[in-house]
Image (cartoon, rainbow, N blue to C red; front, side, top):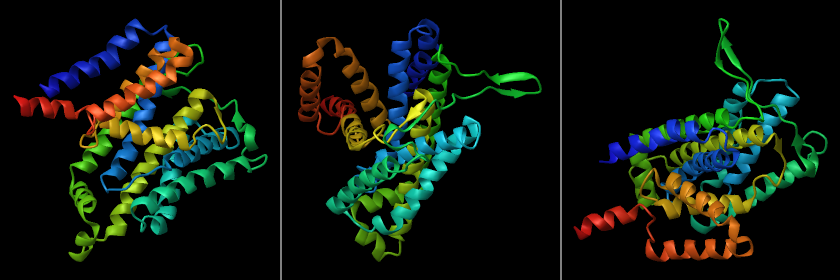
Length: 317
C-alpha cells in the first residue's frame, strides 16, 4: 500500500503539477520552497537520530549560498560545479567545527549550534566587499545550459519560467532522500540509533562515538549547503539574513511535526506546513496566530508527529 502511495505522490509531483501548473509562478514557488526546505530538514533529521538537536543548520545554508555566489560571480564557475562544491564546503566546515563541538551533549550542544549560526551570520555581515557586507551579493547567475555533442541536455534557466527550478528541486529532494535512507538503513544507521540510546554504552564496547557523530554532522551540513546554494541561485541573491536562527528552528519543527521515527517525516512536515502557511495568507493579520494555533494543536494531538497517526490507527484495528 505504501509503495502505491509513494508512486502516486511521485507522479503528481513530477508529472501532474508541472503539466497543469507550469504557468503558475505562485504554485510552483510554494512547492519549490517546500522541496528545498525538505532537503535541508532531512539533514537535521539525521542529527536527531544521534539524539542531538541541531539549531545551527542555517549557518551551513548560508555557507553554501555564499560559496555558490562567490564562485559563480568572482570565479566564473558554472552553477553545476558550484552546487556540489558548496555542499562539500559546508560539510568540510562542519567537520572542522564538529570535531570539538560534537563532544558536547544535550542542551550544551544545542546552545553551541545557536552560537555557531550567529557567528557565521556576523562573519558574512562584516565581510566587507568580499561578501557584500549587510547587503549581501546580488545578481547571482542562474543555472546555465548543459550540452553534449550539440544536444541540449538541460536548457538555460530563466526568470520567466519556474519549471526548470521545480524539476531541479525535485531531483535534489529525491537524491537527498535516497542518501539519508541509505545511511539510515546501513550499518552506520544502526550505530546512529545505538548512539541515540546511550553513547556511553556504545563507547564502552569500542564504538568511536566522536567519529560517527562527525559523519552524521558532515552529511547534515552537506545537505544544508546544497539547499543554500540552490536558494542563492533561485533568488539570485544571498545576504547574511537569508538564513537565521528562526529558519533553524523551523527545520527542527518540520522534523518534529512530521515524525522523528520516519525518514519522510521532515518532508511531510515541510510540505504540509509550508502549504498551510501560504493558504492562510489571505487572513493577513490573523495568519500567524491561526498558524500557531494549528501547530500547537498538532503537537498536542500528535506529539510523535503526523505520521504517528498511521501507527495509532493500526493499533486501534
